[in-house]
Length: 613
Ligand code: GLC
Image (cartoon, rainbow, N blue to C red):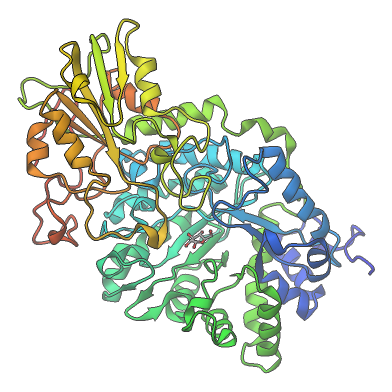
């Protein structure tokens, strides 16, 4: 097959030509089949050399946890992706693929990558610059592995902590979420002055294509049911859930992903008013809209029963690329039939493909389709781990510090005689990272390289101090007179999406009982590892000496001891309401009836005190 575009005269191959001229030129050369294939994102498991060479597929994806092999290195990832790209470039027009994955708190699918705190912890920092730096560091680690595209940031405004994706939301407060969208400029680079509003932007090879998700109202579903229904006026939808997208678009976000959820019963993946009239026409978004994983299949019941209807409804509504990700032949066949019958106008196809090509040109993929191997050593580097440690430190929220306000319990004495550390989350990297880490839903154990909270305590405590670790402390240990205090680290198991939907929100694994058992016998600090506030029983709060909300801190446990032992003061403030009991839910800052245990914005410091309301 003769390859078009080898000769330099092709406008689309000339990087000195304006992007729009390159888009038009390439679009004019494409067959219908090539145009439709650009609208397909397929899983890496079905991306064969033949498929990539013959179909001109738009994108390939690694879903949550989908690595080349167990504990794959950056080089393994780069080799895999360059292998795919090699065959894509052999297609008739040589259009490169975009390779995408979820790097939502660092490059979390990759063993050895720096794992940053999940978004709820970053929301507690309120630190715009820090989050932008995290975006830049994440982009470097993502590009080091050859990946071009991350399905991040999630800019959900979580209005009910019972939602299984609560920790992917920076805050229940739209203004805090808006501030944290600075991560887009970190991931993609900051657009220069005068950059056209709504136009996708990418600074260079050290940056990564971002994806603001899940458009719109994913965090507002009734009772926090994942993929559920957000019932609200358009005015409230705009004020609460839409506003962060304005900030992402103004930073040149390249892609936006619709939510599985619905607004007033209308499925987002087929809502033309919101995807086209609002997002594209009114807000002027000129990147591309990519569906969620099998997002269009969920438009009919049972899933995918009338796939042709699903394709028609989603593409017509404004979806440009479909994360199919497996049955791409069926997708392309039905899409072709819909276009040939005129049910989907050619103009809609040309608009979708133009948006996809625009992002590929802006991202420089035609000039630099292969991995920059000089970045390989960046993965999990010391500088990034120090940044993650800073983020952990700034994310911690001190909820209680001493039974007597005049006798603060923290900072801890690093030269205490002996310290007892208890609880299942004290010595478990997997638990402290949470979901979306190595595996889609996360896992317990030493799942990647990092510093556990126990290791951090041992490294920070004085040389003469004995650090005792008993997950469930024995009566004899609790009876020891030389133990100065106990640190009990408890919390949630890792979870993702609907697996995390929870209406009880108690401290799992009998955490409350463990805390009270220890606190009845020793001065006790509690560290909560969780994606959201959990019920703190009154008798627990009374018995313990101090409580720290550490959220899901990621691999750098020393960020926690930096504050516990006083090298740094606490800085974090609540990004979400800490309710008294689940019967109060949903309850958000600004509600008329607002009676939290700790309000949004609460956080103690060593040298300042603010009483819980
Ligand atoms: C998931 C999530 C989405 C993610 C996508 C690809 O189901 O809803 O946030 O980006 O699939 O893994």
